[in-house]
Image 1: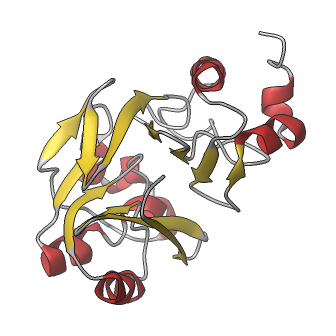
Image 2: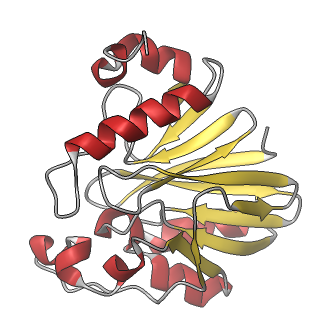
Length: 211
């Protein structure tokens, strides 16, 4: 298990921003707003922010990218299929909120099966399209950051540009095969909890329980 996982609820859409700390290295996952709050928590934890990681490219997960990167020097990571969302307000949905937000370009793009190492923690990139084409989950022993693919009791919307009901179902099936009931899921919105709990309360998973 990670040495520390802190959850901050940020931005107008109550997005979960997570700060993972292992040893002296940190990763900020989905800095969706409230940069000052995020940076204050980073300062309290101490260490060096190695990465900012976006599980996908929507405004409520990337809004504080620039401020956090400029303050910490962290490298920005996002899946290659969502990288272009960072630059285009109509794609990252900021235009729908009356904004024209663009993020710095990623230092590198991620691919399926790649490992992201923070201190002694090693997270595997799992491509889980459906909410966006390049949405990812980050899987590690005992826990997983599931972005807007999987919440404890629901899933991310599929009716935005690039969304797909069919791909979401495929991603949920894929994810279900890789998570144990004891895995703690850290979703993009709502409370974290064990995957076994999600199997009981999430109607989008119950239909696949026998798969």
